[in-house]
Image (tube, rainbow, N blue to C red; front, side, top):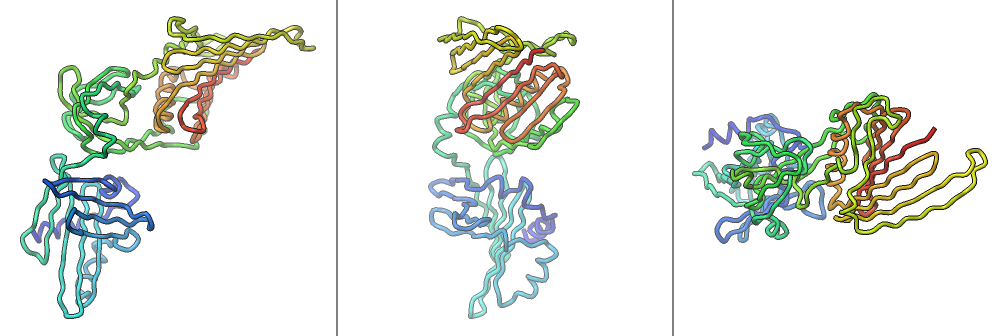
Length: 389
């Protein structure tokens, strides 16, 4: 076991900014029989400090600003520190090692090394005290209460414009069993198992003649969950699933194959009136000295699923505003990404992406599409602007 620990301690030290073990499992809860483990519990009063405690035992306290040595620095610390105490950590993507050497006023000392890693969806803790036989404990993930109701025989839909991978195991290295298309359904059969961060890279996702990407990536923190898809059991990434059937953008937009249309490559379609709940129609006539008499009109249409469409027309311009409900800020980026992928069958002329608003145009003649999020993060606004000549 001592050789094993030396091998682990000699592994490369990963930067804390990467997706390390600490980042993956901060504030996670685990159980082993009646004993509960609060693992990497973040302390409110200090940044970069964490502790691990069980129902009856204190395991460690670490400060990332202090307790972090390279293996090269650790060796002289161990040799020279005969009457002092020290602590070091080795935090990689796959494991965490906390090495704690302590002494007292009477010359008594103790070397306690705790190694943590994931095996078969369990947190394995290997504790070695003064090079004695290791004590191995396996912990089962205890999910927050709010997740329990969401993961028991619930129907979900793929909310990914790219085929969502259905895997044999709960991680990105597992064999792909199938690909779930956008809007297809599956049944979640168990609570979350393995945390995973998924990053959208907007700077490379889309074709455009001119790009201004101020918000290049967005990361979703979610889990792999156990599911049943077409009668087959496997695992899927929960961050790209939706309880509601996702928006079918073909109900709003038709991407034209005619490159010579004045409207560019996109046409806003008339909606299915059977889904309409109400319609408010208003218009007024006004005088414009340059253009003559013009008629301006405004329609507010309310559809099922809390979808609102506002259409404003005059002889020069047409503006269509679509309001869609969302549950979180992650939904804003997922939905915006899905919409742009749907529209990007033709290369955009201009593409601008900032943190809370996106803009695309197909040509100098338009149309322009603006995507933004409401102040309370509960709605997404899609505004299509068609300019006149």
